[in-house]
Image 1 (cartoon, rainbow, N blue to C red):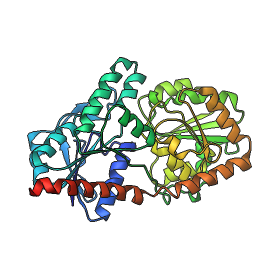
Image 2: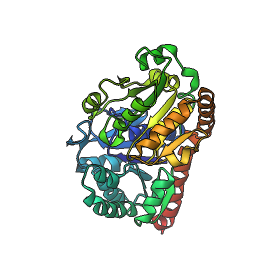
Image 3: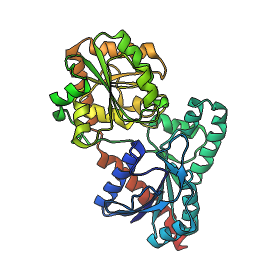
Image 4: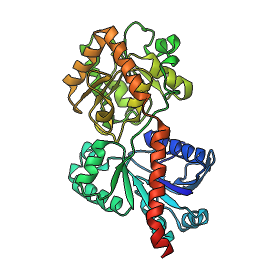
Length: 377
């Protein structure tokens, strides 16, 4: 089988979407499936065994680390030479929608997966009047594919509610070896806590941007004695957040990767995630795999993985008192906090990436079989 993956974002950018795409490509290679990636041109010509077809573009104002632009005729010829059996579109937009036209031209089945809640993003950035338009465009684009995949039951329900016809579930997994309590490090904890390892250490990992609502965590620092916060990651809101958290026990750690990231997860006491919107929230299950109880807003896949009072707590996005109460409830009893961390780890061990990715391959196979009568008629 040969799969062409069209994505709006790829390496060297690092985010949840890029992580999932790379894991998918690695898994397909492991299963003997040939792949090619069509993505914005960012200086990456190959990812492991997968060649990358770069699409020229310009910087995006709100996300300057992204380049956007449509594929060209040359892109089409390169895809045609690859001769794909399946086209997988990672939330089709400027790259993916022309990719759909290419797939139609080549008479190749299309799978579209949902990764970005554009309607809720428009609401968060004060242009909520665009939500009905975005919903309608999302419906049109995803219904143009042969089948669609949602990352969580919450998103699946949204997709069905706006009229997308054929929707399945592609849950997110976790590498429970890479994210593991055994990476706990006294040196890393000392670093994350700015030299106060005895304090209650909250960890956030992810993009530092306004829609993540990281500023809400200041109330926790003000109302929970002995609480400290480590922010791992970077992004456009960093300067604003540094001003907002000035004078509080907050450490801006910057990007971490590899073993250092594994150590950061395993060396904190709990994971906090107050985001306003997510399609899944991959970092939440990574933290759980590292043995951390989580306090997260009810966005994306959080409701699928957080069992209230067992491995963490969830709260309605923007409900700061509930966020504070959840952190206080976990942090007040160290023995209970450790028990919740063990429960988080036990759940994460059931969330294998291999199983999740094999389900996608099953969808590829089914779409090919459905197309066979038309192709051989």
